[in-house]
Image 1 (cartoon, rainbow, N blue to C red):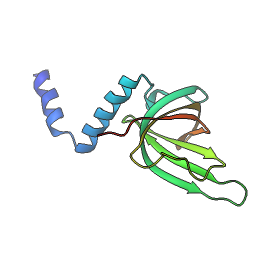
Image 2 (image 1 turned 120 degrees about the vertical axis):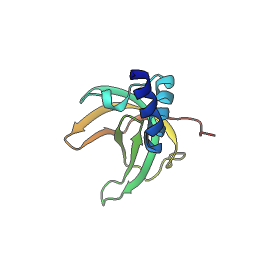
Image 3 (image 1 turned 180 degrees about the vertical axis):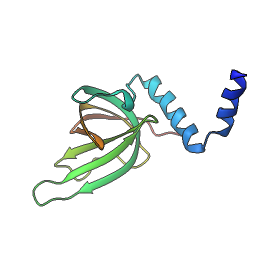
Image 4 (image 1 turned 30 degrees about the vertical axis):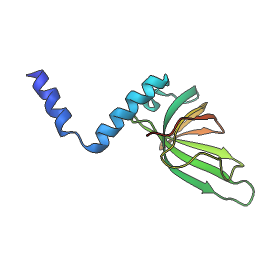
Length: 121
């Protein structure tokens, strides 16, 4: 009975859920921590797919902001003083390392180290 219920859930999952599960499996292979398991103030090493890229121009300091999704959650990554970073675009997979700051409505890492992963085929 339990096996049948598991099969039924697998058959009825949305495409978004299927893609998120596949992405989580890929990120586990890379050897990083899922975003949902990261805690405020800790040094994190997470990987995921860039879902959005935004330039936040200000008079004093520009900021490049991305939304990184790993199948378990979202993380905002901000590079202060950057208008663009070559290779970072929507759909790109990457690993970032830095200190996590958790606000009530967001998880943010400022100026992390990053590694671009090969493009998916």
